[in-house]
Structures are given as C-alpha cells and as structure tokens.
Image 1 (cartoon, one colour):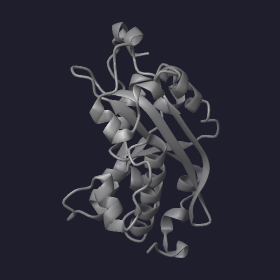
Image 2 (image 1 turned 120 degrees about the vertical axis):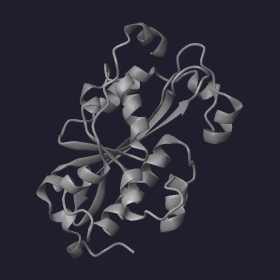
Image 3 (image 1 turned 135 degrees about the vertical axis):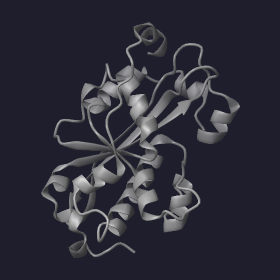
Amino acid sequence: MDAPAARIALYGDAVFTRHTLVVIDFEGLTPQGRPLVPVEVGACAVKASGGDLAEVWRFESLMAPPAGVSVTPWDVRQTGITDAMLATAPPAGQVIAALDERLTEPPYRLVAHHAATEAALIAGLRSWCPRLAAVPLLDTVRLARHLYPRLPSHSLDTLLAHLGIPRPAGRHRALPDAEVTALLLRRLLAEGGRTRWRSLYDLDAIGGLAPKRPPHRPSEQPGLF
C-alpha cells in the first residue's frame, strides 16, 4: 500500500511540487534497416497535490508514418494499429508540435518507462517540439531497479504484476500505457519516498536522463516527416 502522505518527504520538496510530470509513451514501427518510426503518442500530465499526484491534462494522437513504411502483421497483433488507421493520421511533426504547445506552465519533467527510447524519438522530432525536446526525463525503469533490485525483470508488465496494478485494456497503445506508467510512478514515489528519495534532486540522481541531442542529418528529414 502507499505510504501515508505525511511520511513521504518528497511531497514536501518545493522544487518537486512546482514541477508538472508529463508521463509520455510512443508506439512505433520497426521497418527493416531503419530506426523506430513513431506512429502514436500519448501523454498524461500529473502534478503533486495534497501529498499525491493529480492529473492536469492528457493528450493522444496517431501519427502518419513516412511513405513506404507499412504496419506489419506483428505490429497489428501488438498494438491493434493498422495501415487504415494511419492513412488519415496527421504528420508526426504536426502532432508533436501540438503536444509541445501544451507546455505553457514550466517547469516540467518527462517520465517514461525505458525513457531512453522516448528521448531518442523526441530528439528526432525536436525541430517541431523545442520545448519538449529540452525537458529532462525520469526513467521509471531506473527507479524500479533501485527499489526492487531482486526482480528478474523490470519490464512494465512485470512491475504491474509485482505491485498488483491491473494491466490496462489497450495495453501497447500509447495513452493507456502512459496512464498505467503514471500509476506505476505514483507507487514508486510512495514506496521510495520514505527512505530512497526525499527531493527531485534525489529522483534525478537515481532515475534522471538528460535530453538526447542526435547528430544533425538533414538528408533524413524529408523522408521522416
């Protein structure tokens, strides 16, 4: 069970409580010989309130893949996303720019499960999301490894089972995965908040990632977006 709010020092850290935590997840395609191509993004923004996390806003959208990149049968089995669903989706740059426009009340931290993947995808879209691309990240995998070092795996499904958090309907769609990662984050903050992290500084030291800045490859831009 979660620790009582009065015992979680983290919620008394003024720096932490000023931040909005944007829990983000991408779903993507993995065409042969190419990096991961994002085709859906979901985000759930939460903020400390009354010794807990309260939702502030949410965002979700499909994103059209580049020409010549199709959904495979494995992708359909995994996510339920089909070529027909992506045929009318807006371009990735347009979608990520709309998410970027939500970041009007800094400061922020992005949160993701295996955040290096999200960091790389955001970096590839940074021309359209300069605010989002500059936000540091927190990785729930790193936080979970610190709390539960003896678990054989720190995958999202393993952690949900370990903590008794129900696996969401629509698992492997972006917004449901972002929402359940927000639930996971809430549990991690509570369970580690008594002894492991008492401030945002502690969280950054254990689970923080800097924004990723990829090498400039202008020739890739037209094909990607």
